[in-house]
Amino acid sequence: MISLPGMGLVWDALPEARVAGGAVRDFLAGVQVVEVDFAVPLTPVVVMARAAAAGLKAVPTGLAHGTVTLVAEGHGFEVTSLRRDVATDGRHAVVEFTDDWEEDSSRRDFTINAMSMDRSGRVYDYFSGQEDLAAGKVRFVGEARLRIAEDYLRVLRFFRFFARYGSRSGSGGADVEAVAAITALRDGVGRLSAERVWSELKKILVAPEPVPALRLMDETGVLALVLPGADVARLEELLKAMVGAPVDALLRLAALWRGDVAAFAARWRLSAAEAVCLAGLMAPNRLRPEDDDAALRRALADEPAAVLVDRSFLGGVGPGWEALRGRLLTMERPVFPLQGRDLETLGVKPGPEMGELLREVRAWWATGGCVADAGECLARVKRPD
Image (cartoon, rainbow, N blue to C red):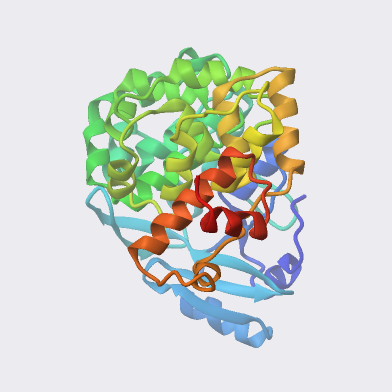
């Protein structure tokens, strides 16, 4: 039975509630449940009144769509009223509340996400979600084309869930109706916000085995829309060799795709930190296992060890590369010991001349393996060769 701190208090206040969606799917799949959402055949007003009577904090996080967040024992639980769609436009839906569990389940995207569970542990499964989960099939609830037209994000969500729960037999294990509908309606992805696309793409990339889903994205033409020029075979080859590599979306993206990082970051609204990280990963990997400590210190003087280590996974594999990564992680990062104020003591005034002198001395310091101290560097300023 699913059990998280605070769930019992929510059920005490709302005995009609059921755990819904992903938590039920993950529980049945043997995946650790870390977040629980509830559905309830009550309006948000009633939910908030019940919560107040039970002494629970209620936050109206999405009243227009029937969602209230209840805080119990320090944990937040989204409680959403059962709904039916009144109108959809491919991105947004107008809903009204209902008390019909099956009707609410029918508006969910995939059968494996349409199940619910009551406090006793009984599972309510109106669309054979348990059977599909056991078979590794990601199947739309109802007619695939209609479900996609309601929200085109479901195209990308299909690949995300296929990557995590789909058959490991690749595209041959994919639901035929779903694949045909996605192929026909793939251009609808262009109507989605950049943030929504990037969020789903990251989730696909960090799946335990993303290659079958990415290959299927390629076959349906969706991959070309979001990552033109992506090379799934390259990622597959590198994943087989990247033993010990972190499960990181940007690292896998750098293995999958080569292109203009700035344009990509602007198109999909990457954060500044993500853009910098991706650019670092896609920079040339100049380190090799046979490099001496001086070469490693020079690299570390320019970039953090974490960036160099992650990039190294894209450069090569084998015991030598593993040893190189170990050396990078244990080596102290050298810091150039001079600043502008040090040159001022020699009578050098701030300005272009000072900047040029610092660059020259730093280049000399780096050539020597980044080991010269401040005194040696200052001496270099006073007595240039």
